[in-house]
Image 1 (cartoon, protein in one colour):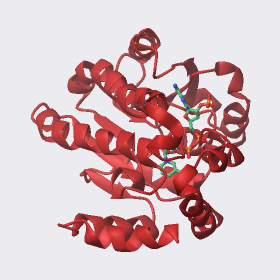
Image 2: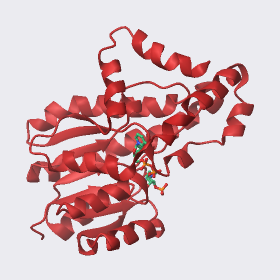
Image 3: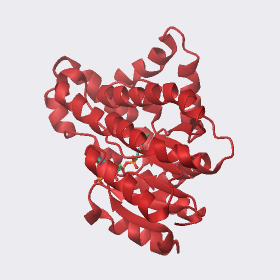
Length: 281
Ligand code: NAP
């Protein structure tokens, strides 16, 4: 049993998850930092040691696509610390390509990680969060609000996440559990490396979309050059973790806020089309 509040975070081998684990421990939380492959915990352990919070971070195995590992990690956290006060659904993968390039299996596999993984952990955690008056925080994406060309599977999965959690939020609130989504724009992390088939492979099978696909790359290359750091994005996540009255939807940068604002006022879809259409020519 610990007096510190306990948070379990998925996908902490790198990027936003790693930075959130460190920042939450720094903010005084007991962190269960989970990875699908604990052999990849080197960078996390080094960052945690450097931040002087080693005693507040427990590394544990959790693959969001494996329900048994989700249940085991939640049970272990509760058995070890006596309570679970928040979960942060952070694990996620990218997937580039339009449906005719990548096929339905790619959609299924992104949904498994980015959507069903969120459902699985949220379901396992809710009884414990009810007991603690806790929080479900999910790293969604600007791609969960604005559909982006050649990111159909990714955006579909993140839209599903937002639909699930926007619907759950008022239900969970009746039992004292807060639900929030955090929406980053481009963030510097290992994310780009997880985007699926290599670019030359995708260009080769782009067929009628070859010119649009190449234009997409030329026009959006700058987005990641201006990406915010994982630490910056993590600071927004920890704000949601610690705020007395967290909002349901939180963007992590002015860029993300500006684009989400366009979408959320775009009743007929023309404003988003006017924004993303020019990326393809
Ligand atoms: P990242 O550095 O690639 O981190 C992704 C994490 O998810 C890694 O720890 C990865 O583990 C883990 N993961 C993947 N599949 C998993 C599974 N089946 N079970 C458990 N963990 C799994 O990228 P990131 O940018 O920090 O991404 C974190 C979240 O932010 C994601 O949900 C992503 O969609 C979202 N996001 C990112 C950006 C961006 O521009 N980077 C923008 C908006 C939203 P491995 O090391 O084992 O692969």
